[in-house]
Amino acid sequence: EHEQYKADLQAEMDRARADANARWEATEKAKAEKAEREKLVAPDRMICTTIATDLENLINDYQIPPLNTKEANDLVLDLVASLKTRIYGFEQRGGQLV
Image (cartoon, rainbow, N blue to C red):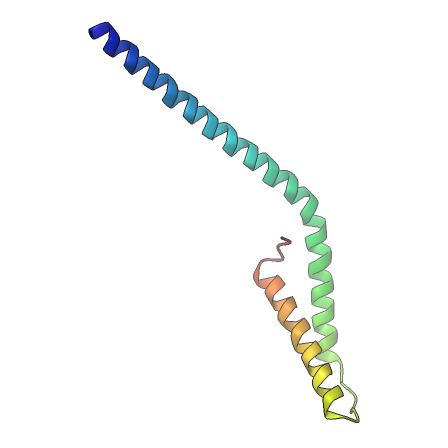
């Protein structure tokens, strides 16, 4: 009976060790994949952030000429607001590309 208890205990310890090793390997694999993804994304993030900043500065400095119709004026204002919102959202996510 004592030997069976020892064998069961050893088997349980072996399972726990195997589970821990599997979790560790999965974590290490996820870290490596994340690092590889970051290598790919970092240059794109820098370019997108530069473009976003340049566009935001352009929008802020640009004087919208008078338009003949309210609809055209509303469209331009909506486009500017939409772009500003997208730029702001991108920057708030830390320039993260999904």
